[in-house]
Length: 220
Length: 218
Image: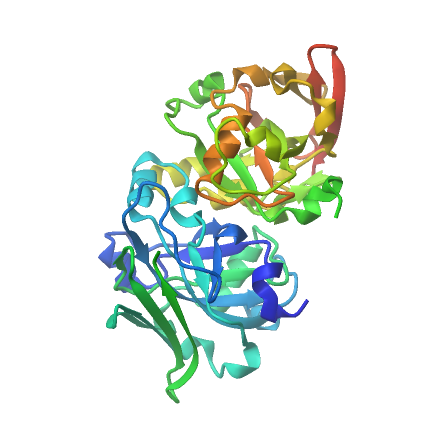
């Protein structure tokens, strides 16, 4: 099946936390020595036209986190960063929606982050962008606008761990399969969204200001 | 695709921690008010061959668990209706990098690498739903190098299978082929290279072994 349908093929969504310095600071987290890795299940995917973002049980708000997604072309395990490029099939824009209250409770209790990160619709994604359409993934700009206000505006060059390193690191523990999605972290500016909010995400190639994709979602 | 191929169909393996009181105690954990939920990626499945220890890790633990294979997906499943979504059962091991997990708990970090490494979810074949008249009559046993190390009764679970299916479905939609691991009884411990693990799922009413599985540690 074509990678355009990665949402149907993915067997996992692997996410990296605290991968932008300013974002780690804004949440009062120490800078990581190694990537912080967690999963979202494929049941959390949301595509445009597939409905609205739905808040998890007992919550009146959740946090937005705009991220660059990397889609894996071919199965890989224990690969070196220098080999990673060959395994990338394409990119997308994504939101790593987070139940921040649940996440803080999990952190305090030493418990898993799963329900805080993995609820239904917690992973809205844009269309698939083929690798050939992206000049340089290390120089992209991510923007998120909530109700016409620019709330996040970040650059992938500010990632602490770059994409080849992340793919290599994950693949040492977890075999990546065709269609799997990797979310590469969010820049600073995370904050709450609630019922009725309109989200508009954009991905640009920084040198040319070319828009690679955009996506719109509403919170139910 | 037939449910006996659930390993190829699953898009998630949802696991429950601390679901047997004695196991919570042995690890010094409080018994939870709500189920402790985490996921393993499907790349963790192992159906035959060797369990491989993750890079540079010494303390990997076995945890024998009853698996429930979802036969019909759903969300917001009412209590009492979980059973309608069960397609079958299996025996499984929730292999855990205990050292990694302890570090994650101390720093408030995710459990993912501690629980989700390749081969951390060895499973038996599917046991048909009809083969189990009452899930509470099931017993899990694990032998390591011929020594019985775990023996627990499903009736000792804190949260029942029905409750867990319903609880998880309030947050995450179940899909056909998904696997639910329902927690481990006491007796967890480390494995090392060359160890032979032999698990059994037994129906205590008639002492019938419903399924067995054998794996060795590379």
